[in-house]
Length: 154
Ligand code: ZN
Image 1 (cartoon, rainbow, N blue to C red):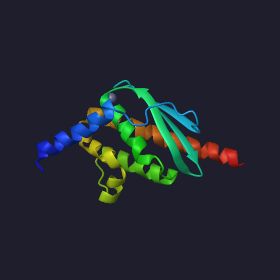
Image 2 (cartoon, rainbow, N blue to C red):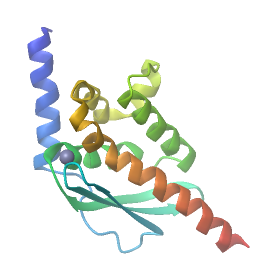
Image 3 (cartoon, helix red, strand yellow):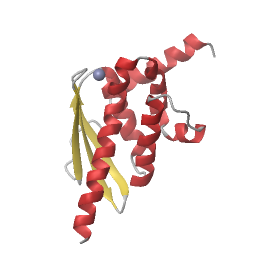
Image 4 (cartoon, rainbow, N blue to C red):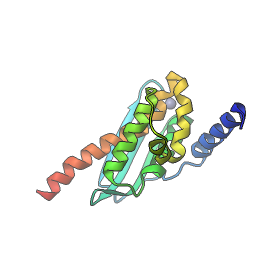
């Protein structure tokens, strides 16, 4: 496939998620919610996770902002739903590494699902925050979940 065709394909995937975001709704049964704001672009992502026995049973997001931030949040929720919190944390790490240009094996990248197309955004430094904000919100939500989970089991 030519580079232009590939680029169009990436754009189509991103646009599809931006126009039809998956899991964009309130999650009434959420065990933890986390809101992160990106002042550079004005994106706000509120991630809501429902964790049970260290597994993300349900995840949803609400928020507003540019298409990259919304598409990325949609891709992130699809990628981590049903995963263990440890796997999800590792995926968030892979994604942030990708953002700073660190190499990862294909296996790690494939686990990200559609989110791996955002690697192409990383050549536009201004958009990196837009792409990573939802993963950042996820990481912070899971860290908070860990703490409150410990509290609950005490
Ligand atoms: Zn943005």
